[in-house]
Image (cartoon, rainbow, N blue to C red):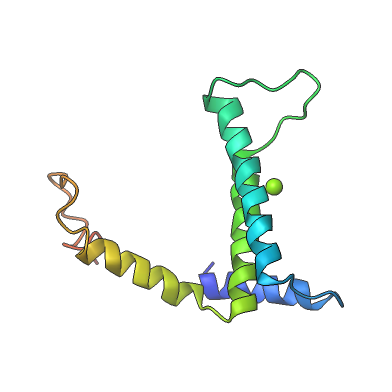
Length: 118
Ligand SMILES: [Mg+2]
């Protein structure tokens, strides 16, 4: 699924409800909530803080999906095209950070910028 399709699907979902999108500040707080939920699951699975016996088992992938949903809500609310935003981010990594990391040998399936060849 393309990011534009994700944004459209989220927009269609939100359009069903009179309340519409939350205000940007509220959406940022929602994003922080979801990030906290992801952090809790990662800490539970890989960290040092086990859950209490009566706490339900969570799902890292579902929490990442929740984060994507809220990011799409915020982008839609602000009129931001996530495909353009992501392309700008990758361009930044490919230019500004071009020599930051040690290249792997033998990756002829990728071009100089790390994109799949052919
Ligand atoms: Mg969640």
